[in-house]
Amino acid sequence: MSGDHSDIVKRLSTVSGLLLIVLVVVMLVGISIGSSGSGVTSLWHIITDPDHADPMLLTIIWKLRLPRVLLAALVGAALSLGGLVFQALLRNPLAEPYILGISGGSAIGAILGILLGLSQFPGITLTSFAGSLTTLLLIIGISAGQSILQKNALLLSGVMVNAFCSAVIMFLVSMTHDARLHNIIFWLMGDLSMGSLQHTGILAMALIPCFVIIFWFSNTMNLMLMGKEMALSMGVNIKRATVILLVTTSLMVSACVSQCGLIGLVGLVIPHLFRLMLGSDHRILFPACVLGGGAYMVACDLLARAIPQHGEMPAGVITALIGAPLFIYLLKRSGR
Amino acid sequence: MKHAITLENIQYSYGRALVLRDITFSVTPGDFFIVIGPNGSGKTTLMKLIAGIAQPDTGMLEILDRPIHSYSRKILARQIAFVPQSVPIDFPFSVKEVVLMGRSPYQGVLGLETKEDIKKMQQAITFTSMTHLADRKMNQLSGGECQRAFIARAICQEPSVLLLDEPTASLDLSHQIRIMDLMEKLKAEKQITIVMVSHDVNLAAMYGNRLLLLDKGRIAEIGPPREVLTYQNLERSYGCTLLVDKNPLGDVPRVTLVPGKFVPK
Image (tube, rainbow over all chains, first blue to last red):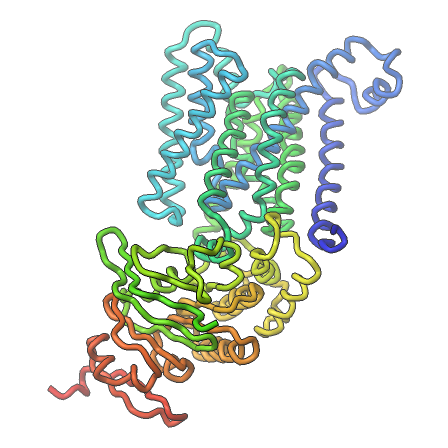
C-alpha cells in the first residue's frame, strides 16, 4: 500500500521527521535553561549519570521545567491547529481563535469556573468550552447574515466579540477582591508555569483525540477550500465536516485556555509560516503545525523566562509581540 | 443508458421566490447541451440541482436513469463533475494539487493518491494543455488558465456528465474559444456529455447541438439552435431588439445586438 502512495507519504514523513528533530532540540534547550542556572552540559550529566547529579537541580528539572516544556509544546500544537482549522473553514487566512474572540469567550467561561470554585478538570474546562462554543455561534451568526465569504464582516464581528469579552473579563476581575484575583490576572496573560506533569497528562488526553480527528479531516479541508459548490460536487459532506471540525477545535482551544489562559496569535503565525514554506496541503500542514507550533511555543516560553532580569513574564506577551505585527502585515497585504 | 439527465416537473423556490417551475426535459448521452437565458432566469440554480448541490421542492430528477437521491455523494461525484461560476483561490494550491483533487471521489478520506491517480492527473493536465503550468500556484494563473485547471480537475473526476456554469464568462476572446474547443474535444474523445450555461448565444449556436432557453424560471424553448435562436424567441425572453441571420461559418444562426440608434421608431 505505502509503495503505492509514495509521494504524499514521503513528503509527510520528511516534514514530520525534520520538525520532530527541531521540536526535540528546542525542548532540550527549554529544559536545560532556567532562572536557577545550568546549561545543556549539566542536563547531559543528569541524564547520563543521575546518581551524582545535584538533587536540587534534578527536582527543578523533573518537577518544574519538564512539565512546563511539555505543556508549552502541547498548547503550541493545539493553538496552531486551531488557527489552521479556522482559516480553512472560514476560508480566511486571518482567522484565528484569539482574533475571532473565541479564546476570549473561553476565558470568560474559565473565569466563571474559577469564581465558582470548580476544579481544573473537568469543571473549568467545561465552562470554558461552553464559553468558546457560545462565542463561536455568535460570530458565525453575526457574519453569516452578510455571507461568511465577506472577510471583513467576519473579522469585524470577531473584533467586537473580543472587545465585549475583554470587558466582561475586566468586569469579573474588578468584582473579585480575594486571593483568586492574582491567579486570574496572571493566568489571563497566558501563563505556562502552573503545569504539573499530571495536569499536562490530562490535557494531552483531551487534546490528542482532537488532533487525530483534525488529521482525519485534513484532506476534506483541502477540498473545502475549493468552495462549497465544488467540494459538494466532489462528494464532500460539508455540513458534517464543518460541525465536527468546529466543535473539535473549540474543545481544543478551550482546553488550552482553561489550562494556560490567553496565549494569542500562535494560530496565526505558525500556519502562515508553514503555508509559505510547504504550500496549502493540509495533510502536510497538520504535522507541521503540531510539531512546529509546539517548538514555537516552547521557544516563546523560553524567551519569556530568559528576558526579564528578575522573575519572568507570561509567554502570551511574547506571542503577541511577534503575532500582532504579522497580523497587521497580512491584513495590509490582503487588502491589495 | 437512455438518458444522461432527466428532469420532470421540477420546481425550486428560494425563500418565497419561485426560481424554477415546470421544468421538464432530458439530455441524451453525447449531447453538447447549452442553457441560455437572461440574468436571473434560473440557469445557475438549474445547474446546482443537476449537480446535486441543491434539492428541488418537487419533481423527479434522474441521473443516468437513476433517481439522484439514490446516489451517495461520492458515487454521484463519479458520474457528474461540476465547474462552478466562481471558485475561490485564496489558498495557494498548485495546479497539480487542484487537478488531483478530482480523484477524491475514488479515494479514502485522507485522499492518499495511487500511481493510477497520478497518471490520470497527468493525462488531464496534458489534455487541457496545462503541462507547462502544472507546478504553478493557482493564484499565479490568468483567468483562462485557472478555468482550464478547474476543467482538468473535472476531467480527472472521470464523469459521464460535465456541468459548467458560464465557463467563458470574463475571459478574453482567445480563451473563450480555447475553452469551447476543449469541450468539443472532451465530447468527441472521451464521450463526456456536456451541459453548460452560457451567456453568449453565438457560442451556444456554434457549439451546442441542443439549446434550452430559460425565461423567468420556465422553459421558453428547447431544441436545436436553429429552432431556439429565432429573433421572436430571443426578443421575447431578453426584451431587446436583435438581428438574427445565418452565420457565414456554417448552417447556424448568428445573433447581433441592435443598438438603439438603429432601431426603427
